[in-house]
Image 1 (spheres, rainbow, N blue to C red):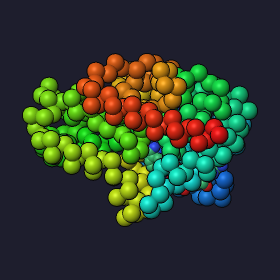
Image 2: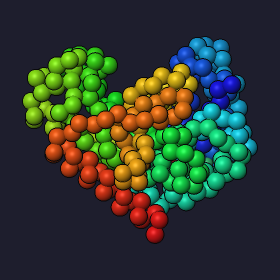
Image 3: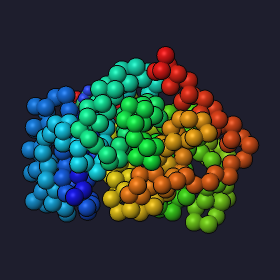
Length: 302
Ligand code: NAD
């Protein structure tokens, strides 16, 4: 049986739930948990009313932490949200306390599945999930820079009028201001991306990707559809044992942190990472991202 528990049924949690219902997945059971269980009751009713037209039949219910015991995936999107002008790192102290309680409660149930993390600051929350759960690193997956990569592919594709699925480019590093695009490894079809885009155009696209969350939050208060879709993409890669390459936040043993790097996602979680051949300048950018995450983690651990 394939079962997902969502903890945190706000914008992101419910966009994930709604995207799950709208795609053909092998999910059998969906359980919702939030501090606000009245809201959850309403969400369960609303989602159940989709079933007559959903491509998949899913048993959807409100739940308790004991429901995590036999879950395949526990997806956490609980926590304080990024307000206007607030960086993801500002959320660190609020959300680390919330995570200690949530992950502790999930583990008390006897959970032995895969954690999928969406809460910001993403790489820090993913790391804390690993620490608080005691599960092996392959079972801890952060959404990482999957959303940033999706934004990049859309923007590049739109600029050159080629479908985004044919843009083979990734955003890597911290899911935050130090993320970057290793353009030296990027292609459209088999052509190097710099044959399509000037350096100036590439820089403009990168800035737009990096600032997308701020731009959306300023206009509509939060971002959620994009991340909902990314989380379903990761969920399907796990359920279908796809060995799909995605820039999830994964354990980097050299630096003892979680960070967004191209990794292979299968039913085991993160199977392994893909080798990265970066030019010097990109290596510096990756090291900068590592340093940003390490510094943020040191704030939590103090
Ligand atoms: P939201 O405020 O709409 O929802 C958060 C939910 O968490 C609320 O329903 C709240 O009641 C619940 N919650 C808080 N503490 C809890 C606890 N202890 N136990 C159970 N539930 C609890 O926020 P949102 O817009 O859904 O964003 C959620 C998180 O996702 C934020 O940290 C946001 O920054 C992040 N986010 C990440 C990405 C990404 O790419 N990873 C993209 C968008 C948003």
